[in-house]
Image 1 (cartoon, helix red, strand yellow):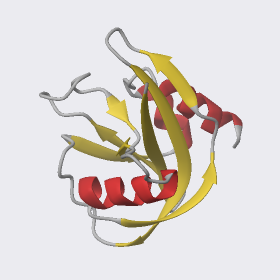
Image 2 (cartoon, one colour):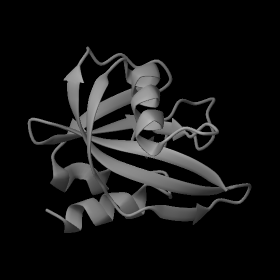
Image 3 (tube, helix red, strand yellow):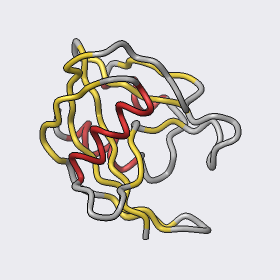
Image 4 (spheres, one colour):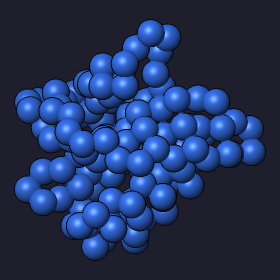
Length: 127
């Protein structure tokens, strides 16, 4: 099982979604940014590191949402979501193809990676 943190970054009432590149697993699917935890790394330090690496942003990590365990055909993921806000930095995509800032009502319009979809639904229930 792969432990992965992800950030629901909120700015001015909008939520950030990022699109996977064509050479990544699950090409062109949308997801919340984040990444794999390294040995001995806390969830929060992993998330801060990954967001800095992937988006060039420093974030404030807030509430944790419900984790999702999802079985893909070739691996199992434990996705660990947190609500976050930008502290500093300018958004620069280093790994993803595209990004969108969306109203909450628009989130379900995207073609999400399967493990992220329960997080979207959980987040929308909490509005």
